[in-house]
Image (cartoon, rainbow, N blue to C red):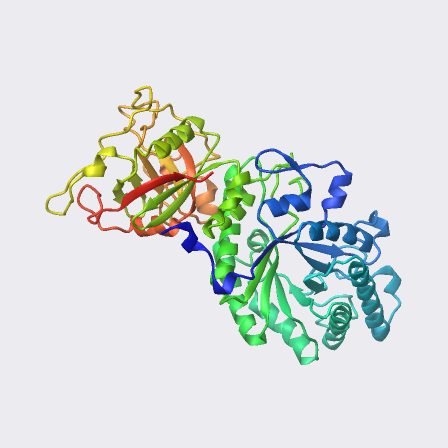
Length: 548
């Protein structure tokens, strides 16, 4: 299967990947710089596009003069102009407050504090019209407009508080909807609630709007597995995503409108690199499954403020120095999955495609393990491992390849097994092993890890690697810790309930990981095998191809 066949069709063609980067101008004023994968300085909006995004979300406050006027309508315009110049779509997020509005606070702007309901509707409409007209006068046509931010219990409290005044909440929302359509008839109006996994919340809020005559075009959801687990509302990230997917399907059917994930984010902890690896997987899963498991009703995923430093907000996606963390690699994963290989041009890690008889597997190679990276590239470039087999496969553990003798091996059977795995392709200088490069805990045996095979500890106390044999981990949940693990089990496996082979961590070199084709790895690891763990039906690696 070539990558061309992985291009998405039908449901996911109009899917948007974006970010709320409303902080960008404020951070720039503090001389905070951002860098791409290769360490080149970039402007924030341009960097988001370079990394694979096609839209931005920008908030606007009514009168933030007490907060240095960030996110007022002029600041909104400046940021929207950048997006327009880059050909990116814009989502405008009206907070209808002088500063932050969210489920815990929906404060009335100071200038509106003495207004009653009808005049409050008029003030909301006037503000909406002024902001959007400013954009229109400058040639900017937002694709989406949020009327309120996380209005789970209404907005403009207490006048528009859902539990107190559902009719007035709906009336205020309707005033915003009409004001948007008066300036931009084709803009899609979003009603935005938090906790996308909570179906009762969406029933209560959206029913109140609908029963009281309010309209919307798209349902916006926030989904933060981190906060869901911290609050005890969900037990783990996997269940949070599952429940959110279920809710997306349900509300899109019940209300007849599409859905977008307008906010998400994952923890950055530079002292625990496995935390960002977990974030990468969760973010990638969110994107992929919202594309493929919602019958086309989810139209996009937006990350909230990825550009911020962890000292400012711990669910961004960049380091304290302004470099992208592993979380942002999820965007590359998605582009590779779709067959958009142009994305690899600016990527810092080498990508290699293994074309197998079961389908394609694309791996990335870590720069932090240069000996193994360069050796794998040498093997790929020379074709030394083309037509070799995955000669050792153990279900719920791993798949292993790289034995040159397997090219011409006879077929195996349960009655007459043909063992393999005793040969390697030596290095150009004739070496038959490589110095270990164990970069732990940054790299570990999570599902999809690309690792170097080696001889046992008794013969190999330095943990030196084989020169051509490698394996890709699979594992299962609950994870097995092993009787004599090299390291204590990372909370990556237990706290986040992720599969892998933790008993190998710290004892074997992990030098890359699968970025596309885990489904192929899964298929291979389920192969029926002979007594030596060789698949009864040969699984052959037809070709290794360097992609960038």
